[in-house]
Amino acid sequence: MFHLDVKDRKILYQLLLDSRQSLKSIGKKVGISKELVSYRIRRLIKNNIINNYWACINFETLGYSIIMTHYKFINVNPTLKEEILNYFIQKKNTFYVSLVEGTNDLQVDFLLGKPNEFEALMDEIREKYHQYLAFQSSKFYIRAEFYNYSFLLDPPVKKINTLMWRWGYPLAQIDDLDFKILRELAKDTRVPTKTIAKNINTTPSTVGYRIKKFEKQQIIGQYTVNVDWSKIGYRWFHLQISLRDYSKKKQIVSYLRTNPYLIRRLKFLDLGMDLHFTFLLHNMEHLRSIIEDISTQFTNSINDYVYYSTFKIYKYSMMIPEILKVKNPLNKGQWTYRVHCILSISLFLVRTMKAMMIIIADNINKLLNPKRTSNVPVAEPIMIPPKLTIEQMISCWDALIFGLMISITIAQFAAMTPFIKNNTMLKAIKIR
Image (cartoon, rainbow, N blue to C red; front, side, top):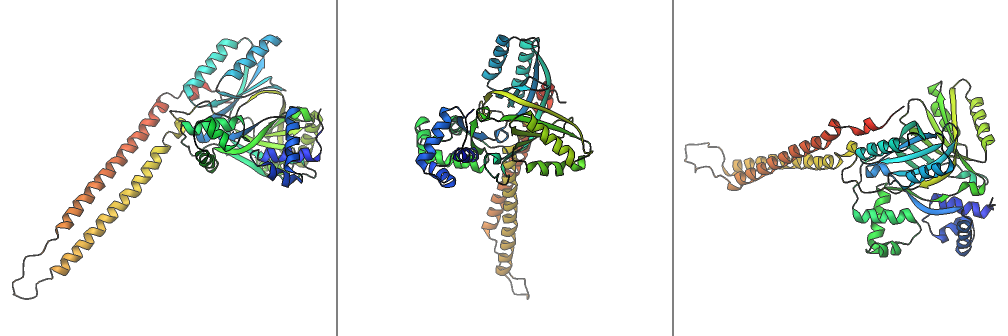
């Protein structure tokens, strides 16, 4: 096991918070020169503590959803287990594959982009490995809080949210160039902008602008590092809590947020579980002490605990497999909604302009054609030709915009019709 001194722990902490910051910036925060920061980082990489630098991509903004699945092995030998693991690792729609210890043996997290593809994949898994894999559970991610790794510091700093993800983000549109930039950042977040531009045949200014756009739209939530925690004496532990007194939920969450070893709090579409916490701990005894502490602090508030640990991670890819040509059915109407809003505002402005022009023209006519007050003949009323021309023109625009709004509304309904008629996603997923 590699021993981290105080400086190493501080450098690792800064890279976990933002792996794209400069060596000079890290050195200033740690209190050493940028040359020494570079040397220590190279040493962490050489000892396989840092595997790679990657960007946390908010899949929801790109039309994807995430589902966690668990399995148990049935009468498998090491060769067959390796075959099953390689099968999941090579699939483009899997972004996380790991062996776990506890009630299950295998965890695979999938990216749901095209419901029909996911259904076909589930059928393929069952047909190919139904004799060796027992499907245990599936859970939809609907919310996640990620915290800073404050246990690396002595004393631990105040725990803060470094990233917040939730179901229902507005859908962001990306093109092929955006996809290429995201793919480069997924490989290495510390690669210079000039290198990215050279690799994808564009200009550094274009890459810099696009990256800022990703951050503003929360397509990229964070730049961080992939750490092999087992090399420095830590392991992932997952604690699920079923509550007896649901009114204590917020108090329990607030209490555990003060624990420096808490890294994630997840929320799933799962009625059998109320809370899910993920810790980085030294061993099982460390987790038991946390459970005992919760039970002491919140007596008669908890029904049950379920826990398991991650034994080994085989795949953790934060890159989407492809740009969705047909977006998540729940978000298909996003572009039409925006156009509909623009047209609604335009229609309001056109009708307001029309009313104002009519009022102005009437007032001008009254000034030029006063009422008769005597028997003196008065010339025929002077009509202002522009009045009728403007009215007709504005009326045409009014009708055109209204027609476009009707068309967009029909397009919204048409986009949702296939999903309503053939909701294959609900057929494919078993929700506890």
